[in-house]
Amino acid sequence: MFWLRLALVLLTVWLALVSVNSEESEELNPKVLKTIKMLDERKRICLKGPSYGYCKGKRNMWNFSYRNKDCLPFTFSNCGGNQNRFYSYEACMEFCSEKHWKSPDIYDILEDGY
Image (cartoon, rainbow, N blue to C red):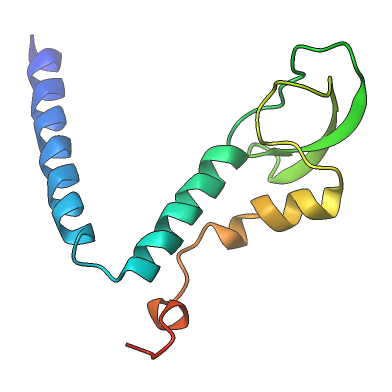
């Protein structure tokens, strides 16, 4: 019973924080919001594991492995799968390396420095 109560309390706190963050994000500059959404999308793609797909082709591709913090080769079927697939190691690392996951300085996003 204790764990259930604790889970409910934590869920309530989390929901409250999410709603506060949603209200705050409406006040942000649209450029900042767009950049934040792009960073979230990049993380979502790069955290997915390799997916062969559902066709019969065999193409050597690269997939970012969060566990290894590196891009690893895998075989792709040429259709289906997910977006965590790249034609070269360099393209994979450029898109998925964690240096791109950190939020940039807000002044770098805004053209006028405000």
